[in-house]
Image: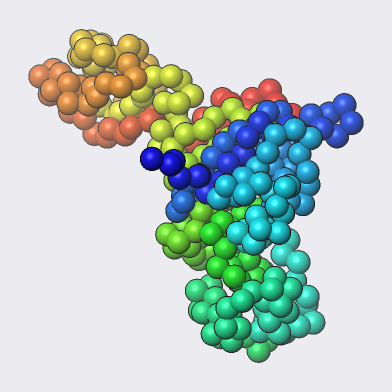
Length: 313
């Protein structure tokens, strides 16, 4: 049986600027329909990675495959599979929304029925009501939507979005988040950001990059386990500290119990085990009620700081 190619494959990509390594042996993949977050501090290498993935830059070493097609060897075929929204969309402010999308449609050489396809894309990103307005008169949120509509022309299977919510107000951010989540049902999406709440709200998986290297690659809700090598639970328990520690520590698979502020505790346990039922029973027997239990002891913010501390911004 022939194994189906990943939608995106980044293989051992290295990029140098003089003596500086912007990227150092970066590798990751993304499956069809996956929303993958590329997370890192400013200057970590996110934009360089995305520019190489879209063919704007060439890698010094390594390859990038889009649905099995090498971006450097077959650039036209590979780029036809990509819709790209840079941090600042390259809009023509004196054009109306429809005229701009018609221009991009022709530029991309899309072979779908023009009017019907543009109507469909505008409906998806909810800009049909401003199709006749001049782009310079639109709000930042609407301009981002126009840029996203341009990226969607031709129905590319891959969308690459670089900081798509920068400069938006809270309502616009929520709207763009919802839109990206809905687009993830039909497209593979690479979502770049240094805003942690954005990534956790939108992405199925996180690839964390720092100083040009991949420092973590895990499902969003499994990141703390991937970092520590052990499973982690966060708990709030009402009871005497020693009684709580003793009860949790008696459960098979528990490695360490750490007391936090107030009634909070962090429990580290052996990876591959599930200690929740045992902890519940042990604390019930000790008459120490559990007020909260959450998988993952480290928040995304804590994980980010643990992996990037000491790195240059």
